Length: 99
Ligand SMILES: [Zn+2]
Image (cartoon, rainbow, N blue to C red; front, side, top):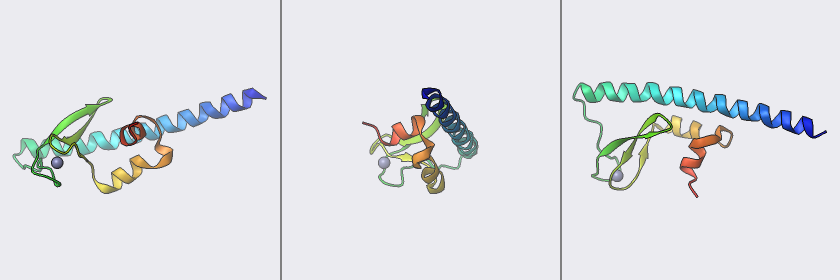
């Protein structure tokens, strides 16, 4: 009987892993655009919340922007919503719900 539970847990983990991979790929694509914009001299690196500047931070090989003053982490809202969904699981949930 417990074999069923193990199998289900394995499938869930695989699902979450795939979801994370999708999110990571999207984030990578987005950061590539941001890097290109930076290289082109288009400064969008000021924090929208305060006058701090956004710095690239790497989490699990993914670069995100975080503010050096207020500690805000910036993504576009659709992405944030997707990544913070309950079923996204994994490292991103840990990031947002840091205990
Ligand atoms: Zn800030």
